[in-house]
Length: 432
Image (cartoon, rainbow, N blue to C red; front, side):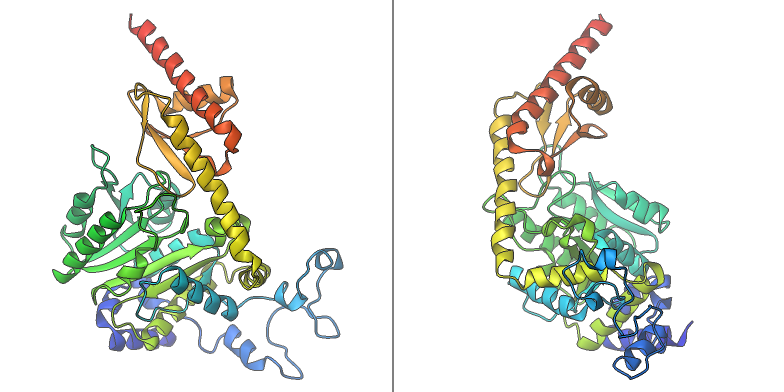
């Protein structure tokens, strides 16, 4: 094992032996090169002659960028074209931590300084690299990319349990059963607001989730709880838990490591910027522990994507410090909430003969659960005959109201109902 990895492991073990035991084999072996190129380059920064980092500079020391690109960017060349740190831009990391705490006032203990990743997908991959070996518990339905990430990419298993019971209540008992199954270490992934259902727990349900996890930890289970907070903040009803579950999990129990994986993709409407964050929290977590975990996280980032776009990070930092940021973000939220309310209104016009909505109250999506009809047949008929696109997931239709103009929502559901009606009548005729 590399000496740098050994040193990090020693720090983590001395600060929190339980967290050390949660690391995967890869997680124990990964490190950030203490004397590698990034560190040597940082030490040479500001020197008269700096022949370290592999970028090209002009004779005046500015980045040797193409004018046809740089003249279109209203950002200094050094904040756009040069490499960002493998940890991410330090000013942005500090700002994002400040924003996490502001949006989650229940956080009363210290949490780590976030590490910048290339979007939330990369953050989830980092999570798997560091902590996942055998299986990860995920309620279903879930985002299909989890399969590529955890099964194909990391050769793990996904242990599923239904997000909702047959009576469409949040399946707290299913979560409890999986956490208390055989094995001392558990890796749990929770995604709220959920993709694809658009559901976030109520305040009562959130407290029950926390209680189940705490009871499991008190029984001796060592639990890594990852919070995929891609759609954080997009909650449209009263009584719904407004904070991330991370805020409670980060201080819950010594046997629980909370990992917040979030970013600007959906939350700040900057999908192509590919900027995400990984943040850690645990009861009694120390600065030394968090720094060591950050070093390992940055090691995974460097060993996979190297770093995240410096230009994206600079633009975001500027936006977060702009007083117009809060105003504009509220405007976008209000538009999505308007579409959500329109769906609630439209659904009242339809009976449950062909479908019923799964519980939804947040995010970008909602799902219709079909009654004995084939989702793929409906999807294809909508495409071919109604000029309408939706996503078919097993016995469900996922509808992205985030990308559906408000005036077209009523027509969308009418098209779905008419398609279901036509297919159902065809099935009856065939059976006769």
